Image (tube, rainbow, N blue to C red; front, side, top):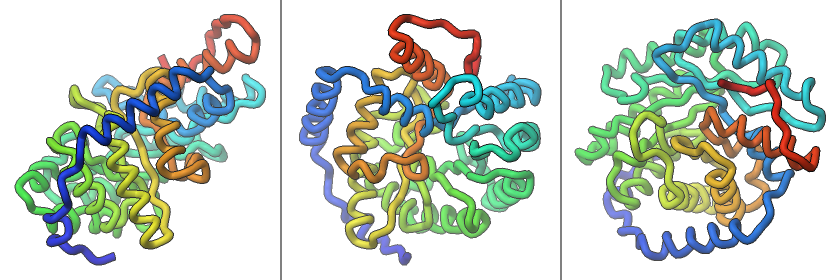
Length: 301
């Protein structure tokens, strides 16, 4: 794909009121429906179970991975999470537990979460993450460069990281809470898609304003327009603050309405989360048993 900064510069302002009206309609629809166990199972299987803490230890990471891998051997008819997402230094520990499983191993990269380091460092970090066993890379864009209008720089940086990733899945984190406007989110989405992103992702989860339905709606529109033009499907990853079923279900419904049910597979939709997995699992067990059910088998925590 080629990049035309003129087209990015001239993206029209997005009407916030019309976006919020659509989102209110989706929320209202979800509030009037019972939670569907099929949707809960789907969400669980779309989660990138994440631990990105300075206190992470190899033992903690291995324990989380082991639980994720063995989830469906403990609970019948439940698929496990899509991926485990860790810092690069934890890849080897995670990989040792994920061998021969369906769970992918994702690593953050490119100076996560700020992205404020040298391109050479970002490229090397990504290369080492892949060499150590990462199946997927979650990179951050240079928000400072973007806000200065250096769109070519942002495009070139993403394209360079994608070149290192080759056939590995690249998720590009826009950090929508720092971009200021929905029009900026649309611009960043288009840049990331054109530069080679396999997924576009809302947030690092490291700032106060994580994911929002309005930001994801705009990202979904960019994905839809790209698909309509090219026939190529880009994934979406809402992340940052999606901690409960009540928050996750409207996102799932919005994806279904904008992109269609064909998009609802974990090769195209992910939720970046930690506690969400536990909440979804508990609700699945409650619905299946017909009563509140506690279990000491949690994915995390």
